[in-house]
Length: 546
Image 1: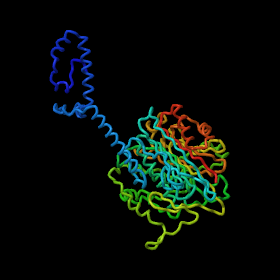
Image 2: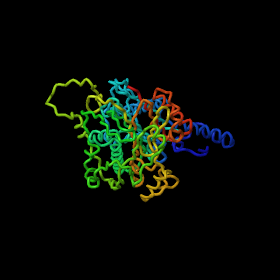
Image 3: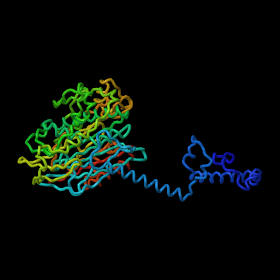
Image 4: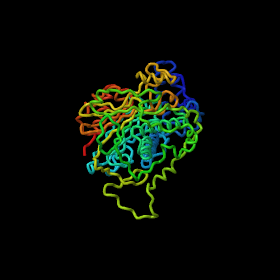
């Protein structure tokens, strides 16, 4: 504002005593006039900071009488303190509301950053069902090997305005001691898809494990990806949010030992907690309107174990020589072309899952009315999963036990295993620069320009991205790896790390670090120092022997 201009507040205040003389004097002294004008402008700026906020809005009506309601600096500081306390209280309420019972699928937070619980410590060592919580102590029980998880994440605020990554891990997954679930979801075009997957993907996988115990795990993971992809597409149609996310998930499973060869498919018996009851998510139970619209379009799931990917193109094998040396069995994902029948579903409404939620609190086996509580078996421990109490199953087998790591991914988030100091990639990067992926997209009627699908998206497979679902499919690349004593740790991370770090370099950086939390932070700092421009989420799982 120049010295000759006045704000609306200036015009409402009458001339002060002596103003006429000073104005007459200053009119003959331009330098003094400019100096006094600058001082007057500074004075008005200070006064405006204590005026009601409506006066700062140039489109609001100005009321001269409101000048009497100016706040003193002391009152302004007091109000600021109260506002800060109120903001902290609301933030605490939002954080507390995330604890306990999982929110229904589709519920999203209002925060611009994707919500992943910070690294927390649970009471005791029992954490089954508690998302992103570490046990206070994690020890081997009855020769059951365990693991430890470390997670580090950073928005990378110099390059990104919001955090679109989400992560998930669950100890003793499926109510079985020693099993685990690990996942990272890297969002784009918004946080919604990644945040939803972080809160709900493991529930869909658990439902699949409970309801279909004869289907091979890679096929179950493939089916889970398809179901989650359809669910996100339906939510996107309702909410008009077309975000997507790349995903890498890993399931550490305990199975009975067998004599199969490394390149043979696993048919070993796994372990499922008999006290768990499926919530019906894989069957769409509880989502009545969606089920009515899609039941005629959904055919029987194809679980033939073939190597054909979506569009008839098999997910390519990467690093075959290193895989043979490491005896890691891989299998391309199965499935058929996703139908684009979800478009135009904007009017469908999501049904609540409270009924299924209540049903899940009942035991899987019938019991007499008001029975006396039976003691837990000697091979189990009583724990809570946020919905009901179950007995934590400690698996036993005369044949012995083995650990099998199953992974599935879409996009460019990776899982890298350290075996005897050697990095083994267990995932595949689905990018527009890949020749087979580019061919699949062009065969489907799309195009790849500048290594981007239709010139827009850098990845060729993802969860969500409903506006491009005809080309950017959700069929995952799956792997199956039997762990042995040489397997030290697993790195699960988004492309924010892998864009600036080679697989072997990442392994070398943290191999001598026994604390997985310290190891994950080292990798994150390394990515930032090497000018990563993306959000960063790094998870390290250190395997312990029995």
